[in-house]
Image (cartoon, rainbow, N blue to C red; front, side):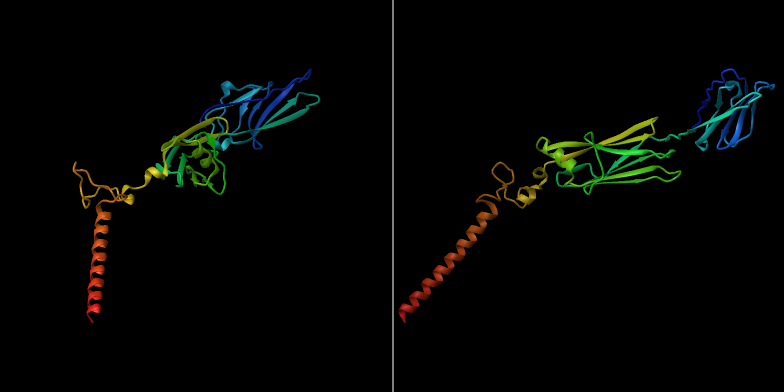
Length: 277
C-alpha cells in the first residue's frame, strides 16, 4: 500500500494494426491507449486510481500510491484495427497489502514453571490487510492444535491480530522436550511467527525457565526452613534436624518416657496395696 504498481499487457497482432488497448478495474475503464488519436493516451476517473501517464503506454500502465481498495480484478482489452476489429481480453487479480506499523509483541503468563505446570503465551501484531497469519513454535517445533495444545486466533477489521497459545504438561511436544532436558533447570524458547502472503515475515520470542519439580519444594515443607523457633547448633546455625533424633523429636521422646514411668510407678503402688489387703 502506497507504492506504485505497474500492470503489463503483452500481445502479438501478427500482420494486423493496433486499434486500442483499454484497461478496466472491476469493469470500470480507467485507461485507454489509441495510437491514431492525439494524444494516444487517455485516463478516466475511477475512485482510488491515479495513473502515472509518463510511465504508461500501449503495453503497460502504472498506478501511483495504490490503496488496499484496489485489491481486485484488472482487465486488459486489446483490439485490432479495421477491417476485422478482433478483440481479446485477459484479466488478473491484484492484492494490495497493508503492512503492520508495529512489530509483533509477545506476553507470557508465567516465566518460570515446573514440568507439571501449564503456561500461556499471547502474541499480537498491528493492523494489517489481509490479516496476518500467526504460527507458534516451541524450541523450533511447530505447534498444532490438540487437546493439550490450544490455539486461539482473532482478527477484526481495523484492529490488531491476536493469537494465544495454552500448553498443558501432557502435551506431546512438551513431553518430548522434557525427556531430553538436562536435570534441574533449563529453558523453553516460545516463538510466534508473523507472515502476510510472501512479502512480510517477522517473529517475537521469549524464554520460559523450567525447573525440576524437586528443586521447587519449599524447605519448610521438609522442616528445613531454619526459622528462629529452632534450636541453634554450636556454630550458630539452625539445628535443622527434623529427620534425626534431635530437636522436637528428642523432646517428644522425653515426654513419652515420663508418661511411661508414671504409669509403671502407679501400677507398682497399686500392686503393693493389693498384697497388703
